[in-house]
Length: 137
Image (cartoon, rainbow, N blue to C red; front, side):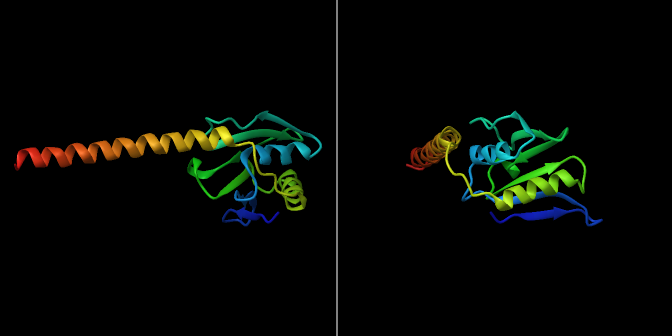
């Protein structure tokens, strides 16, 4: 899997990211579980927004998150930069095959929210339209 490493102004690697078209939130957790020595402390749930998975590797906490809760990539980061453990996890992701699926409830949640919001906007637009027709008739 192709990943992009993120670094701060000092050139220290503090995270890596990968496109989520080929891997799901649940798939990300499954890839993390495949790495020996990891313990997942928070599994992805349908109601998670940004941070959807937290885990420890060699007694260091890491987070897997999706910026703004709706982005085209996932990021895995630690609270400290330039960790050997982060590089091990990054290499594990590079060597792993993407795992898609298991996010049906999360996708359904956003679809329902989008549908409700759309109907509310259509209803407001219709109310304004009929209000103008009534006032100017």
